[in-house]
Length: 205
Image (tube, rainbow, N blue to C red):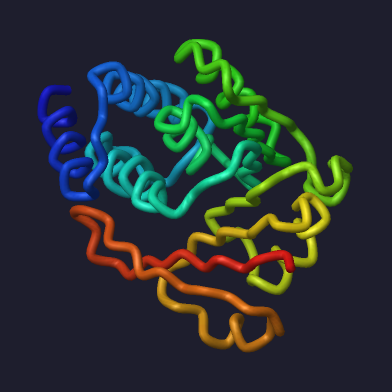
């Protein structure tokens, strides 16, 4: 997977992210696990490792400069995205990864164990049944629903100064018009990916 390492290193450099050898090794090991488990668990429609590096790993890490806080929950994490790549680069931050698909949470649990990541907990369940009100600084999601619906489902998880970070494709103007709240939108460029990407931040207060 040398060409994968090169692709990853080039992509990280383009994003301005400084990575240790261990962080790079962890990301490559994670992609290897995804590729292996994908055959049986159908984690992602993307099968090819280089495409995974671009569309899953670099896509997740492109938002790293905009993520802060001590307790972060990734809602609808799927195969652990963006939570696992972010947790690798934010080792002092506690991540909770939530998904309602038991196959995917089993995969994430195995990945956390094999990669020896101590700052992640995985929960199999639905966001509306989680409880844990006002516990998190940030809710992050590779947006699984409209912004209005994501806000309605996840806002209770945020402490008063917290924020929702929703990873979207093109700027969702119609969705933004519905939310009735202050927001900011950052355009995100993912190395090797031509599709539009943006990150919407909506503060709780």
